[in-house]
Image 1: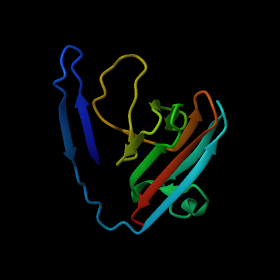
Image 2: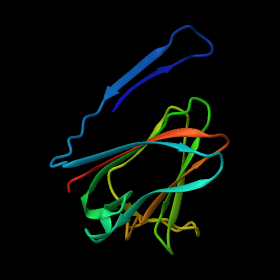
Image 3: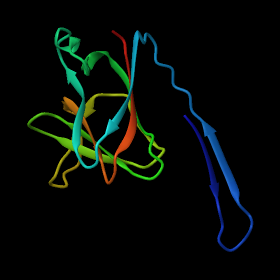
Image 4: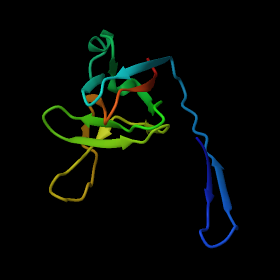
Length: 149
């Protein structure tokens, strides 16, 4: 990940730059699946199934949880956000909004969420499905998944 930020001061021309590069190496990646999807306006679409059994992972869009090392969802649209919904079937659900020209990255399939304001002490559940939802217009999204098997 490379980030470059400029802090602009409204009262002076003294802008300050901040740049940083972070490198994380994922060992033993055997497969990379990259898809560019056209999401229809305001329809939620299931794009990833995360399963426990290797035989279930043979279906398109299905991946064995223990093999997933990295998921990147990139909003390719330049003006509309995309909602990412992480779901544990029948249990926890969490959602985030991905701004235009931005990415959401997962390096784990763990999930824990509470609606009652309780502290999250452990990630005792795992994601079963990932859905995407175009917020206000048709958008293109790139989904990249790297697995060890």
